[in-house]
Length: 310
Length: 301
Image (spheres, each protein chain N blue to C red):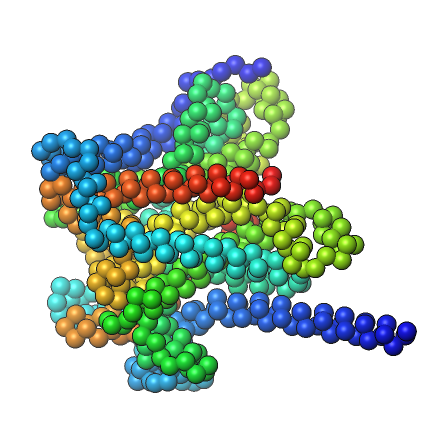
């Protein structure tokens, strides 16, 4: 009897260990798959032209073999042609544009979102629920449906002109249409609604105006949510591709995503410089990753809530 | 209890509503109007005549649009179920390792904070026939090199590469949402299952999936909408001119709409684009409604 019992326990333990090994193996393989593109991008960017075209490809490289020439080459000035005198990949120009667009859009979005969320959460007015439902409905509409009409609108507003587009024009065209977000209003409204009504009535008795109440009470209480909105929103400009490409008439007005594709293929020979291409990709990816690790908790909490609350 | 303060409320809403009127509601209505114009010139605002079906007819007869619809449906049809199943599996696995959960979660979240174009280019180089890491790894298992993205790549090969990129990109959000969803499930259910010594599979099928079903429905609807708008991943892999290993071989509906972007001065082009984007809108709406209706019987609230 005892033998059977012992062997059963053993079998149980063995089974448990086996399932644990399987579990960890699965999670580790997934993790490696997620990390592989980053690794490959960074490794390739540190290879010389000869190394990058070696068959079979090099999978491991000692730090002493790493070369930064791909990175320095990106900043070498173009000798001839249309873009003579400019760096091969004007990363800092694109980066500056992206940061400026990101900041302006985020400020605008935060203002419209806070004001609207306050109205929907706190104020009582005719047509509130219908309006809110209509706004939520627009979230279902693919943004692509707007883009060409918006392009014509921007053209009519004078922000698009092939001959004399100014930096201000481009900034207006890249930011103004994107200063609203129904999703963030929905998200902030939920937070605002959790603030007890009693606070509002008490403030009203004291003669506080609505705006002062919003500024002094609601915004401070909802600050974590607002910060999450600010962080998530400021990441948007990094992935924007089609709109900035469409409305910027000069190369120097573009955002990081636009400069990446096609920049490293020699138009006469058709050869692509993969090392430079990967170096530029690393440069574009890095700021977002730094932002992520600085605000990891807020970003992950914000994104996970955006799924739960939906 | 509170008096209505209509005027003041509209004042708070004014910045939002003015911007949305110009850049959301007007273009939405305009898209429908423009799609009924024949020979429309957007810059002067003139059209030859009104014909509700003309532009839709042109688009639907265009073989490139058919290709775009087929590609888009394959992307959505494969990437959404695969990534949802995979992320559910990962989320459930993460639940049983509380200590290392945060570490793995952070790694799995990385694709969310990348630039799709930049990472798409990294994938393009990973899939390079001679210099790429994918064929190197396949070689370890005795599989001979595949031409994934080269000029003579097969349709299946380039589609698989695009699907892998799409799934890789979409996992982050789903894993995070499902893990937080799992945290909210009452522990009692699992304790009860333990007493009944239910198998892991039974627990997954009878407890986890039913209790997560509202979340799974929400994620599958948003994922389908996202997948139907696939564009950046194609640009990352192939560039926005070629859109495939062969010209336009991986074109999507959104890419089809955007090909008219340079023709804003040409007669009728904006109307074609409007018609194509309205078709996309209807496909999205119909699929979302279908998903909700079909799963209504299965979702437990």
